[in-house]
Image (cartoon, rainbow, N blue to C red; front, side, top):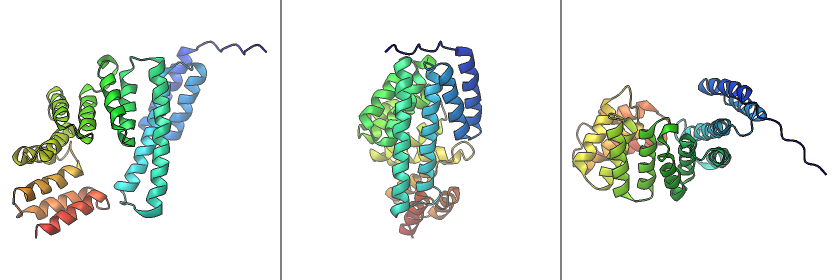
Length: 263
């Protein structure tokens, strides 16, 4: 039986559909973004950007579930378990799409970066490190080199390789001065090393930049650092600011707990 002839690539039509998908994604319409990305692949199944787009949709769906679990309500029990199962499935689907993207275009740094982020969320730290490292080989196709390096540093940190984490995060901070995420994560490195004064300076730097850096965890770790230094007075305003950022989150609950120990 003869195989069906492969449809010729219609790259311009595919690009038009992908542009629509980007627009929908920017507006938070995940369903429409996925639909247009699939249509882009109907015109050109080798459009690596369309595969990456479908991966992004699944990744953002996973992050939405994470927000429901950790930030909007700090869920526990059956509801949390069900959402975590759904979250993991979204992540696995995202990884499949990102894998297809880099199989088509091995120099697609952004797809490697996204695959690294997915692996990091899944707790697959060796894979995350490998994917972020691969992404950095192709800076021309990366949207934000500093962010990728900061993510690589965080993967090393979570893998308990603190020296490499420090190296990557310092490079990220040098590449993009004032980067909130790199600053917070460097603070965590210093905290892990018990370099309290350096940790204090980094966390303080992040939370003082209120507009650009609404990182709730930085408030929590600043409180922890003050307590390690034996400075218990004046923590109440910091606790209140932390809680106000996301009152129902798990981090807010931790900030309340840290505040109670300081009394």
